[in-house]
Amino acid sequence: MAAPKKGRRQSGQARPGRALALILIAMVALTGGMFLSGHTTPRLGIDLAGGTSITLEAKAEPGRESAINETNMNTAVDIIDRRVNGLGVSEAEVKTQGNKNIIVNVPKGTDEEQAREQVGTTAQLYFRPVITLAPGGPTPDPAASPSETPKADDKDAKDDGKKDDKDAKDEASDPSASPSPTATTQGRAVTDALKADDDPSPSADASDKPKASDSPMPDPSADAETAALQKKFTELDCTKPAQRTKAAEGTKPTDTIVACGKNAAEQWEKYILGPAEVEGTDVKEAKGQLDPQQGIWKVTMDFTGKGSKKFASITSKLSQQQPPQNQFAIVLDNNVVSAPSVRTTLSKNAEITGSFNQESAQNLANILSYGALPLSFEEVNVLTISPSLGGEQLKTGLIAGVIGLLLVVAYLVFYYRALALVAVASLALMGGLTYVIMSLMGPAVGFALSLPAVCGAIVAIGITADSFIVYFERIRDEVRGGRSIRPAIERAWPTARRTILVSDVVSFLAAVVLFFAAVGTVQGFAFVLGLTTLLDVVVVFGLTKPMTTLLARRKFFYDGHPMSGLDPKRLGATPPIRGRRRAAAPSAEPKEA
Image (cartoon, rainbow, N blue to C red; front, side, top):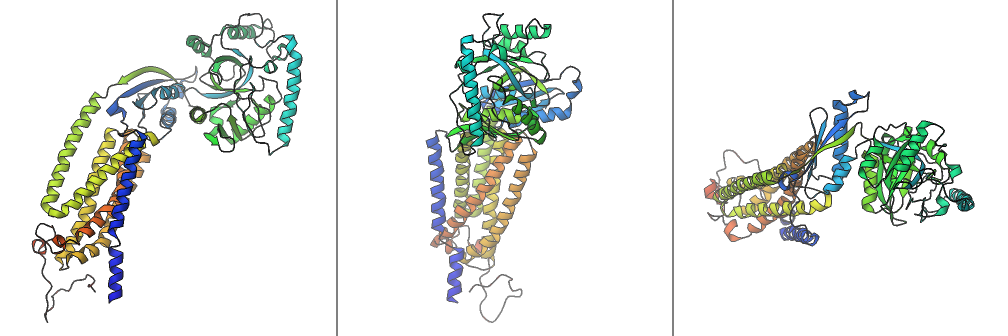
C-alpha cells in the first residue's frame, strides 16, 4: 500500500512551488519586457483615443455604372480592410454606408498618413511599358523630344547597350550567379528575377539615355493625337499636385498616357507609358521579404495562370529594348509606384530589388497584393474624431466594472472565507497578465483596445471566477462526503480539471468563430475573449491549483478551521461511521488507501 500512496501524492501534489515559481518568472519577464519596450499602456481604438474617419465614394467608368453594386462594394471593403489592417488587429474599421460610400475609421496611434495613402490609392493597378521618361519639371524646349541626347553620346550609348546585352547573356548562362542591386540607373535583371531601378533618372548616366532615333514616338506633326500627347508630356510639371491629377483624368487602360512617379532619390519624374499589358488582378500574391544571402529587402510576386502568360509576353518584348524602353511601370491611380527594368523573359515568379528598406518593400507588396479594386474611389470627406464620447463611456464602464469586481470579491470572502485568498490572487494575476500582454501586443501586432475589447476583458472575470468556483465546489463536495481536507483537494482536482478545460475549449472556439465571422470592433471583443480564455488555463494550472495545495498544508486549513471555508461542520459533513454498522447507501467514490 505504501508505493501506490506515494505515487498518488506525487501525481496529485507534484511540486506546487515549482508551478508558482514558473508563473511568477513569466509575469516578471513580461512586465520587464513591457517597460523595456516603452509601451506601458495598451494602444487605444478610435472610439477611445480618437482618430481619422475617411469617406470614400465609388466612381464607375462611363457606361459601366452598373459596376457599383453590392458585390463589388463588399469586395472593395474586404480589400481595403486588409490593406489598413495588414499588420493585425489594429482596430481600423471599414464599412459601407449607403449604396456607394465606404467609411474607413483609423484610430489614433496608427500611422494615419500611411493609412490615408493606402486607402486613397484605390484605383485599379496596371503594368504598363515605359516609352520614355524625363525629369518631373516642364521640358525647357518644347520642340525637342525629351528623350533626345547629344550626338556625341550616341556612340557611347550603343557601346554600353552592347555591353549590357553581353552581361545579360552571361548572367542567364550562369544559374549560380547571385542577384544583387546595382548602382546603375536602370537596374539589372536575372532569370526569373526582376530588378528595380535604384535611381532611374536619365541624367545619372549618359549611357542610359535613349537616342532620339530609338524613340517609338512618331513626329509630333504626324497626327493630332500624338502631337497632343507630346505637348501634354512636355508641359507636365509633376511637382505640382494639380497637374498630376489633371494628367490622370479620362485615361483608360488601352490609352497611351503620361504619368508621374518618384525615383529612389524621392525626385519626381514623368513618363510616357504604353497601354496596360497586365492588370493588378493578375497578381496572385506579393510579399516584402528580407533576402538573407544579400541582406537586402526585396518584393516577390506570384502571378495567376493567365497573368503569367501576359507577364511573359510583355517581359519578352521589353528585354529586347534599350533603356528606358526595357522598363515597365507599376501604375496605381495613374501614379508610377515603381519602374523596374527587364533583361530576360519572366513568367510566373518575379522579384523586385533595389534601394528598399523594410517599410518600402512591404508597402509596395501591399499595393501589389491589394491594389486592384473592382471600383475606383474618390476621397470625399476626412474628419478628425474626438475621443471624448468614448472616454466617457470607458470611464463609466470601468467604474461599473470596479463596483462589480468589489461585489464579487465581497461575496467570495463571505462564502469561501479564507479560501477566497486563492480566488482574489487568481483574479489579480489574470488582470495583470491581460494588461501586460495587451500593452505588448500594441506595438507588436497593432492591437488597439476598443470598448468591445474592454467588454471582452470584463467577461474574462466571469471565466476565471467560474474556473476556481468549479474547483472549490468539487473540494467541498469531497469534504461533505466525509474526506479529510488534503485528500479532498487532490481527489477533487481531476474532475474539476476536466470540467474547466471543456468549458474553456468551448469559450475559445466561440471566440475563434466570432473573430473570423465578424468585422470591425467585434473582432476586438472576440480577440480579447480568446486571449483571456487561454490565460484562464494558465492561471488555473499555474496559480489556483498549486496555491490551494500549499494552503492545505497549513494547520489552519487541514484542521478545517471555521474561517478556512472548508469547515466540515459548516458544510454539513458527517464523520465516518466506525464499528459494525455500515452506511445504508455506500459511496460510489473510490476509497482511500
